[in-house]
Image (tube, rainbow, N blue to C red; front, side, top):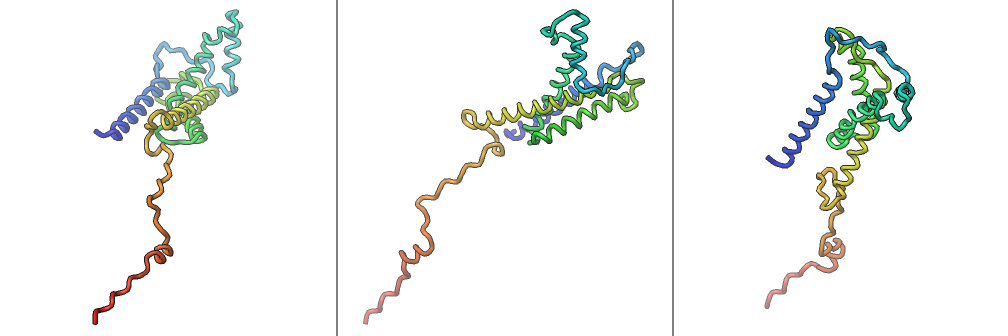
Length: 202
């Protein structure tokens, strides 16, 4: 198996593994008979998670130093981290630009939120996940962070020791000049005049 084939297998495995991870995060755990219904199904206020963190800290009598321990902060962080691999794959494997990766992250996040809003497109007994605009923002931000990480990886991979990047990632090198340099046609004509036939002996 060649290196190119190994890279394709590894890339396909990474995409499949990430797809399974996202599917598990979106659908699991499935609702059961004892699963409580959410009190709120739609949240359309941007960066509402910051107010949620503040409210949870005030309720528990904690300072902002403990913000990382609140469920709201942890949920926002996980939503960012969930889409970081998407940005890395978009840059490293699919060669997408920054704007294209941001749009891809937003589109995938919107698909996820639509799935949650429609109770898994009608396959679940009720809506058990909230449609949150903050998830759209955090997922898109995670995708862009992943793109930056992928771009940094490619830059270090190409300019690092040995320059072991792939052929399409490495900048094209200028062709070395031929030596000795070829003379222009006019010079050739002046330097090499046409030969005349030798006279025949009488």
